[in-house]
Image (cartoon, rainbow, N blue to C red):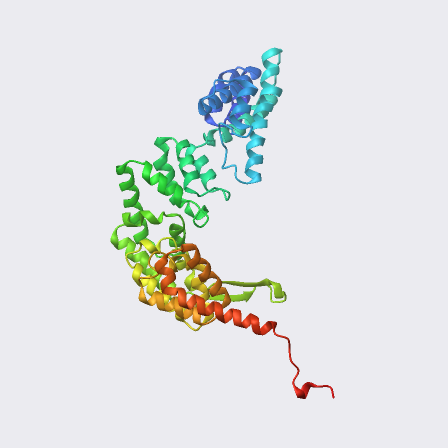
Length: 409
């Protein structure tokens, strides 16, 4: 008898090392009495209770597992559900739990079973394994769902759409969403969210806005990485520029200005053996300045920026002029285009180079603005450049007249 007791105790000791403490605590009494079937159903009932508690669902059995882990919007997420592997794991665990209900729990609830120790050990260990996934699962965060939505590449950044989206976000979640958009801003595309962020900043309380700006200033002051600043400039609403403290604003403005001074377009072949792979893009030094195009008109150093643009338009290097055409043409012909002398000179000088691409861009913008003062300032240069191109076309259309030296006799 003593040997049998020792053997049972040894077997019990082994099982306790293979399952979690909480699973063992619910299965232990029946297991130690040799009532293995009841120990199995105890462990499965415990899983059911944990899933109900974590999911907030009042369902049971397979319906509970379906709602909690399967479908398009599971109540409990085992992972981020972003990659196919993560989605497969989520589905797999859901089906394992359903399988335990269908193949193990339900039959023992409706028919008489007399499981032995080996079966109990196998099932209880497996229950403990699957329960680890349940423990680590979380209810989907509303903010996480909204982040997925706003960072989607097809998100519409228009003001009208941003207002509609804002109406769907619960009031208590707006501040949290705003903070997390900036925390994960590397996921955003350029100029993708500035209108939504502006709406969010308008909708939160003044205390929340103050706290947000305070923390943002603190982070930006410590940031010296151009990549981080590029992402900040790409989503921060320009009209909120003045909310940043002067020391932060001027730091960023200086970095943008320094980048702008060095900016130019460069060309290279993506494939040295493919003539069609020619790419024309901004040089590395000027990349930061390309993210500031929407904000510079709100800069305290705006006049300095406009002067730099004027000097670049005056430059003999077409790659330097092309940078302004490519990235700053809207700034050049903004409300300040007829007030900054360096910019006025630069625009006129750039037209004198008789570059058709520059001329077409500038003529379109001047016509689109339709401002009398703008047309008055640049009208003569536009007209003379147009006359130059017209003359070029006229000359090219004239029939070629052979000279006497070219006659065949």
